[in-house]
Amino acid sequence: MSEANPAPDRDTPNGSRVSVVPLRASSVAANYRLRLPGPTEVPERIRWAGARPMINHRGPEFREIMGQTAEMLRPVFGSTGPVLVFASSGTGVMEAALSNTLRKGDRMLALIHGQWGEQFRAIGNSLGIEVDTLAAEWGEPIDNAVIAEQLRLREYRVVAVTHNESSTGIVVDLAALGAMVRDTPTLLVADSISGVAGIEMKQDEWGVDIVLGASQKALMCPPGLGLVSLSAKAVAAVSAEDAPAPYYLSFRRGLAAAEKGETSFTPPVNLVACLHEALGMIHEEGLGRVLDRHRALSTALRSGGEAIGLRGFGNPATLSSTVVVFKAPDGIDGGAIVRGMYERFRTVIAGSRNRLSGKIIRIGTMGAITQQTIMTDLTQLEAVLQGLGFGPKQAQTVATAG
Ligand SMILES: *Cc1c(COP(=O)(O)O)cnc(C)c1O
Image (tube, rainbow, N blue to C red):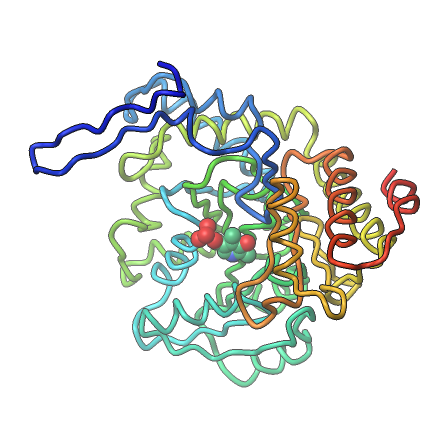
């Protein structure tokens, strides 16, 4: 079993040979730090929860886990309504939010202030939906007066918005948007995939009809679960006789299954167990404290970053608590900072894969992070920046982050 002797190649009946490399010998370094705005580090407690023996997904043991998971999810969404769990990444439930509410030729309004808003438009187009858009400069929220005016001009079945835009680090005011559609037939769909469990979400109070989440962001789980929280108005819309009827990611089917504490099709049972454990951790710490911790640590990372000479990206009035975005200093490519963090420290942060490519770096401040996490981020960032020829200011870093 020695790792010094790699397993020999194995013959297959297809005439090919495969080499079987044990997973423990794969190449994740001991000091590897996952600091992306998703997926995020999965705490050991949650990893173990996913290592339980398999159980029947239609039996009482699973129904108990699923029922408790839904119960613990509701306050995280600020909802008293149903929360559906799908085997899907975040994009899958973004598509489902549109395919369950809109038919080909129906009209939606996409509010776009970053990459994920662009994705709503692209999904709408792929479904044959008529997509009108209101865009803001990336890093700025969209002007509510402009949105209100557009809603007066035209009736929309759906308004889709990115609550927490991970590509720019900006949060929008969902309460204001909810107030605009509350007494109308229009459904407000919010992608809070990188927000839920890391920033405040008050679905019922704000009047948001469909809120989307995913397991691999502030919920600290492996990727694979898409979450959908529905208002009473959304339930009525997707349950109507003439509602669109997608097959696999059907909300109507999901609602019927959820009534029984089940999911429509075979769920990723072990990921649901992970989510159950993660929600237990969140409620043990206290949801309010979890959100406060996200706010405090993202603020600490921002001010520490400024102390080493980095400038923040985006409108300061609307900054996210789950992702911190810095501008790459003049003359330094953002990608070089990302590479430097990985090559020197095996710390994985994000650059940008869109129009901001090279211009910004992004660090996740969601999930199981502590003050120590932020201190390490800053120490390593400073060293990498210095290596790239950007001035040293060590003393201040530690003072500000502490
Ligand atoms: C991560 C993310 C998504 C979904 O990404 P998937 O890779 O499909 O899980 C969608 N919207 C936002 C805001 C995100 O941060």
